[in-house]
Structures are given as structure tokens and as C-alpha cells.
Image 1 (cartoon, helix red, strand yellow):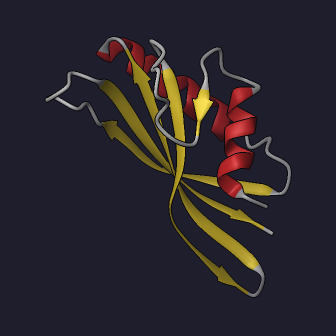
Image 2 (image 1 turned 120 degrees about the vertical axis):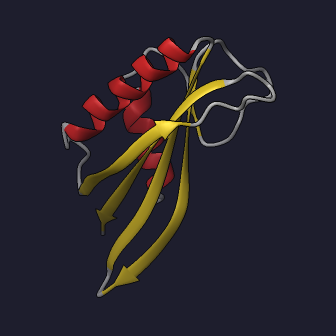
Image 3 (image 1 turned 90 degrees about the horizontal axis):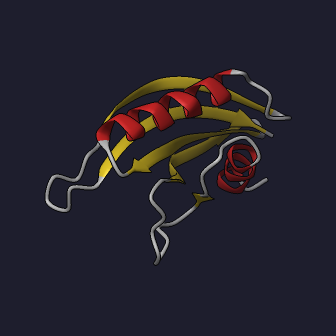
Length: 110
């Protein structure tokens, strides 16, 4: 299982904005990027830190998108994946005025 793809596909089916695993060349007004920040394996149980970055045209829209992501992820509906919320924060790029929020999940999967 490629956990980033699994999370991306899961969020894509539930959000009304595009979800990517890398920054798109043509950025839509709002979008999400899923990436893996690190991983480990013990006794065939995989663990990965997943970063989910909510990008939007305004700070309020980025906060709202972040909350939607947390609501979806916390429903714990991803088959064979356990997600534990670690935190979220304002991750706005002030130089480019790109409004974004980032949430982090620890995921456990086989």
C-alpha cells in the first residue's frame, strides 16, 4: 500500500477540491496536497506521518478546508488504515501570500 495515494484517493472522493501528492503547475483557487513526512515499520505494521496541506484563496477558506479534512479523516473510514490526529496549524506563506493550513496524522497500516 502506498499510503499517500490511499489518503489522496480517500480525500478526493469526499472533498469538492482537487487533491494532489505534489504542488500542481496550474494552481486552482483551492486544493489539497498529501505527503509523507516520515515512516517506520515494526513487525510488518507500517507507520507514517502524513501531512495534509489545505491551500485556498483566503485564510478563512484555508481554515474551513482544514476543518473539512479533519472531519473526514477523523471519521476513520479508510479501510485497513488507522489515523491518529497529531495537530494542525496555520502554514501561510507570507512571502507569496499563499493561505494554507497544515494538519498532521500518524497512520498505521499493513
